[in-house]
Each structure stands twice: as C-alpha cells, then as structure tokens.
Length: 422
Image 1 (cartoon, rainbow, N blue to C red):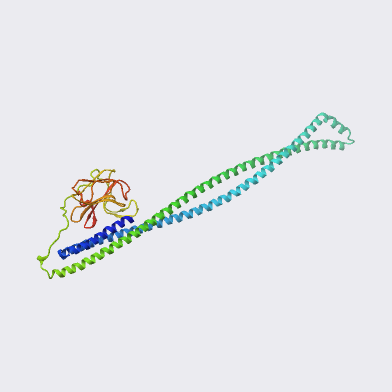
Image 2 (image 1 turned 60 degrees about the vertical axis):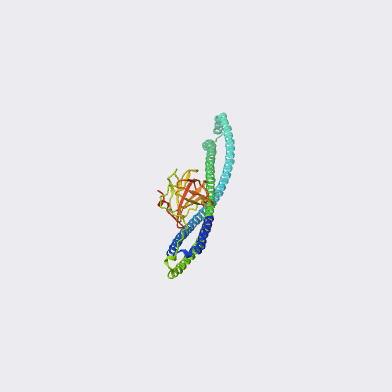
C-alpha cells in the first residue's frame, strides 16, 4: 500500500505541477468560464480525495477495532491458560497424595503378608500338634480314659477327670478354629488391599492422562496466543500503513487546495481583464483529442463474470473496507484483454500494486486502465482500435487470483465502468 500511495502522490503531484506550468502557456488564450470549469474539476478532485481520505480513516478505525478485538482475545486466552496452569498444579498435588497413599497401602500389604505367613506357620504347627494329639487319643484314648477313671478315688474326681478330658479336646478345637479365622481374616484383608492398590493405580493412570490432556491444551492455547500476537503485529503494521497513507493523502489534499485557491485568484484576474478587452481578441486553444461518445466493448471477451464490482468493498488482501475504483473480471490466466475503445496508449509497464498494466487515452480526459496482466502486447505511444488485443489476463501486483481489473477515469477521477461498457 505504501508503494501504491507513493505512486499516486507522485502522479498527482506531477499532474498538478503540469497544470500549473501549462497554465502559464495558455493563460492568455483562456476565458474565465474555461478557468471556472477547471476550478470545478479541481474541486471535484478535492472532493474525491477527501472521500478517499475518509475511506482511509474508516479503514484505520476498523483496523484499530480488529487490534482491540485480537488483544481482548489474547487477554482472555492468557487468563484461561493461567486457570489451566492452576488446575494442572492441583492435579499434580493430588497425584503426589495418591502416590503417597499407594506407598502406604503397599507397606500395609507387605505387613499383612508377613502376618499371614506367620499365622500360616503357626497354624501348621498347631495342626501338627493336633494330629499328634488325635493320633495319641486314637491309639490310647480308651486306655487313658479307663486309667483316669480307675485312678479316681471318688465320684467327684471321676467327673473332674472326664470334664478335663473334654475341655482339652474343646480347647484344641477352638484354637484350631481361631487360627483358621485369623487366616481367613488376613486373606480377606490382603485381597481388599490388593483391590485398593489396583484402584489407586487406576486413579493414578487417570490423573496422568488428565495431566497430559491439560498440558496438550495449554500447548495449543500457547500456540494460539503466539498466532494472536502475530496477527496483532500484522494489524499494527497495517495501521501504520494506513497512517502513512492518510498523511500522504493529506499532502495531496493540501496541494489540491492550493491549486484551487490559485485557480480562484486567476479567475478573478481574468474577469477583470475581460472587462477591459474586446471579445474578438480572445482565442481558444484545443490541446486534447475528442471522445465521440461511443459505447465501449467488453474488455475481456472470454469472461463476463465480475468477481468484485465498483464501489466500497472489503479488500481481499488488507481485509479492511476500501473503495474499489474499477471492476474485477475473473478469467483464466492468458485470456485476451482488448482495448475497450479506440485511443492512444499513454502507459504500459509494471507497478507493485497494479502489476502489469495498460492505460489508454480516449480523448476529453477519458482514460481506461487494465491491471494485473500476465503479458503486455502494446507500448506507450501506440494507437489502438476498439477490440484490439493489448494484454493477457494474469495475477501480477496486489492480486489474489487471475483477473482483469478494468478502470475508467474521467477528468482525473475514477468513474463506474458500467456507465461505458455495452
């Protein structure tokens, strides 16, 4: 955009300077009415320049709004990432607690396992003792009972002996049952602890998964923040471009205003001179060819599709509202571009904004401009007829795809091409 505006400032400055120098040559040959027409033309240019300036200011405001929106999104994103960081820290703390619980459970399981082994050993010893006792009772049970009974000297001793034998038997059975219950309890406790250990391990795995998800999300959001920062930087650069364009536009406006003031002063001087001069002493100088008012032919015979019309639009590259000073005709690369009307080529070259372009003078300050061509078939100074091939469709300069930008200028200002093409 900076190069484009620089180009426009040079052209307009050159035009104004040329008008000023030429005016010295034809002052004596112009009437006040002619100068009045030129003044009105300059005032129209000033109005157009002011309109373009307003468009630039509007674009600057839109760009600033975009920067503010991006900054707000970035701020919201940073806040969200901070919240995620807090959640991640909380998850890590919980993981530490879970790992501590797992260690404690493992210690409990180890202790329970030792107690179980000890109980099993005692149960085996008791079982061996019981086997020996049962074997003894089996082999000597009746004799022992008879001896114990015969040795009793009274009925009470007899009853006591019988009760003693019964209690020994019951004690052995109760002791064995108690050890069996202990073994069952320890085995149940161990099974429960193993289950808890599995549950804790599953919880730890779930926490690890959640941690990975949160970390991935933070990485993704960080990437988005970096993108927003890049977008903000680009938007700020665009804002700087607009500020530079506005300054350049203001310079052009100031030059036009000075030219209008000079014209007004000249009109006053000529009016005073005409009051003293004879009408037959005035002469007229015609320095331009004449446009006969004919209808233009369509400049791209292979396509009638208009991808972007004349007037305000969202610029496809700058992404801001700007005035589109022509019509874009979408067509394949290499398609023929023809002269819309008979005239003289006054420009054929390359510009960073227009790409390869052709400009044709049709007389009476009416021009047609053909931009973004892939190839040029004419040169400056060459006369062309309506329908002659002058270039090929392309996408050079500031262009987003193959098309012909067709513009029409009248009296120094762009006008709607639809008013001329058939």
